[in-house]
Length: 251
Picture 1 (cartoon, rainbow, N blue to C red):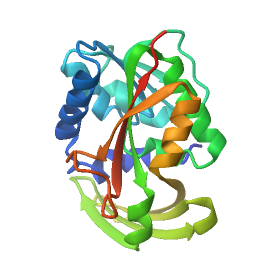
Picture 2: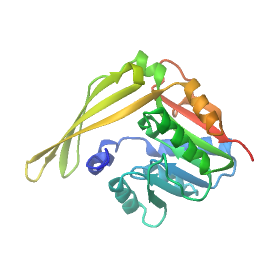
Picture 3: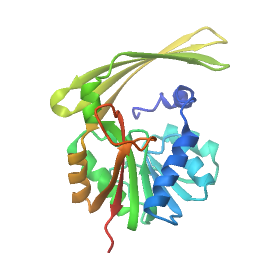
Picture 4: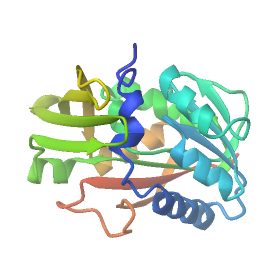
């Protein structure tokens, strides 16, 4: 089972306060500023499809790719027939079509922990871009991760059926530019009082702008924008979430 297998059952509950609408509007603005008139979007690592659905509502023809069948089941239920969802790995999937924009949001690129993973993910983005198309992604930004290091976090949420407690414990690997985030999730049924305990590890790569420029260039992409996610501020030591926009070279 993928790392998000069981986690997908509680994913939308964990992130119900996330500003998906604001993020979709932000991404829409980036797309239209860098590829005016763009009409199609591929969402790599689409998860439960929240961003994909909101982009579709803005008029884009959207396709989504995720490696978790459980996540895709949630996405398909939310938008039956509106979006073409595909099971696949963003490092290797090939849909035999191109798009005006490719997006990979909510730190999906940071899940590509090895250099080869990043190389292959960027190659996938480039392969699916029309000439002049834009690739937009966010990630953990290295200078901020090393300045304001991750700590143990606890989050508690509930709905009408369950109460969930999630504990996240980070383990840093300096020579890998990686943080292993250990998840302990306790799910209590309000009806029966029973408690289910889940354990997962999410391996996250933090990235730096020079290596991103190098990897994009090797994939035939040119870095056009580097800014803080959602705010547009310059990247700095306090920028945990970085956003990058790259453009496929014209043919």
